[in-house]
Amino acid sequence: MAKKFNVTVNGTTYEVEVEEVKSAGGAPKAAPAPKAAPAPAPAPKAATPAPAAAPKVAAGAGEHSIDSPMPGKVVKLVAAEGAAVKAGDVLLILEAMKMQNEITADADGTVKKFNVAAGQSVKAHESLVILG
Image (cartoon, rainbow, N blue to C red; front, side, top):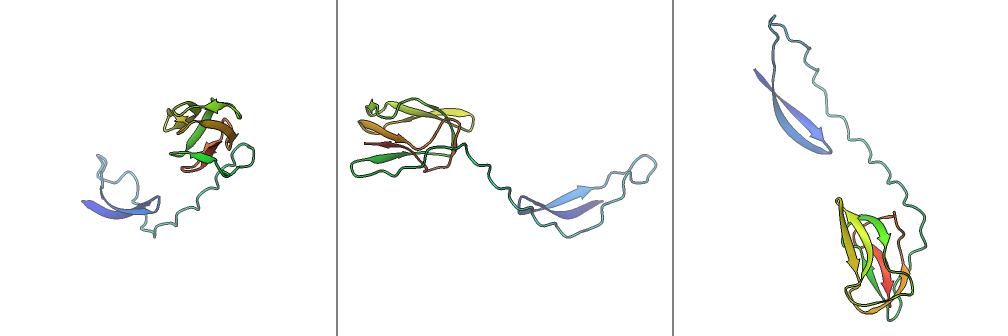
């Protein structure tokens, strides 16, 4: 005989059907759990702070920001601050979903400031580099 239950996982409720299996003696191995109201979901844990990095700098006149296309972790800064770069030159390596992605310059210019450090986690659309 199948019994129906509502199960909540990560805030989403699912209706499941469970069939009771009896042992050879005809008695159930374990008593069925009493029916209880779903417990409230635990509060999400606070994010761990990222390694200390230089304060973020906004792009000034004649400058623009290269932003992170996705959340991830900065693996390596390839270019150096003050270096002249051409469009397509690799600025840094961003690891996301176990893949290493090259973040490149979108135009010729000079690396004015890195807003991130190696080992730092970043969010999508977060400023990574200021080019001028």
